[in-house]
Length: 356
Image (cartoon, rainbow, N blue to C red; front, side, top):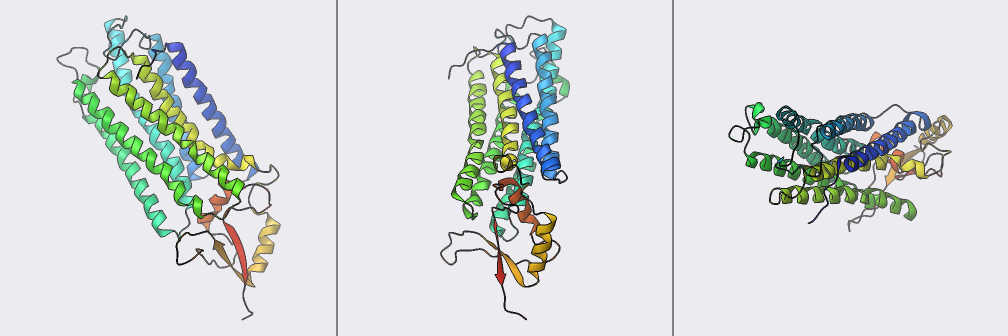
């Protein structure tokens, strides 16, 4: 697959453009949470902000690589064509080793932010779906631990990672194993996180337009998967064809990590596409009325279920200060179409019971 060899200007421009976009998206997310919805930051928000910090740390290596000449189009993956001195070359190798930690941490924190959202969205009564969700969480945690462990143990002592001497430096097979295992765990984690929403979205009782909007939001994840696949192809080809420059690998790696960061933020911005006059949460008056009504009725959650033995999954909840199951609160927050004061994509139905 032929690719041009980009220069440092193209790499830095694409890298920091995506960082700016991610910053704007995260700022919009925090503004929505704190100012519009009048709520405190959730765990997913904190994780996403942490991912953003690590993304900036990763991007900060770019200007240093450029200043040392490592991003010149003539520098190949074998570092043939590097015009700097021995000390500069050793520094570049040290930086390439160091950037692995924030790079992979950004990947996995982006996944963790989405998984934290799904923990709020998936209701407790969807037992099988939540089991799959927790299995994905465990896989992502293990994937991160394995990747970071490989970075620090696959070639010991660590100084061999930036050793210039061919006889004392790490063998090429070590880098190949690190990349293939790290990429495989990251890509499979992306696929699992991408699959998860489709386990619940078809069951939601929502308007067709809103359902299409939800589908479109999560389908954007295919962009991240496509970029991830291209990065794998480019780096694998680099092992066979040294005509590929080091800058090409850096470019696709930065696209992969930063596109993933932006995509991970998008589902939480769903309320911006509805009415600006509603935060998607019940007001104090609505809560009061609902509590009063709750004394005469019970509340059930109505959701479509394709199973042949029934059409709905019901989750009775007792009426009290809050009529909503906490596991459903965030569903309203993400996918509220904003056209009602108390809009929700999981329909709450009052079922009037005979007097006791």
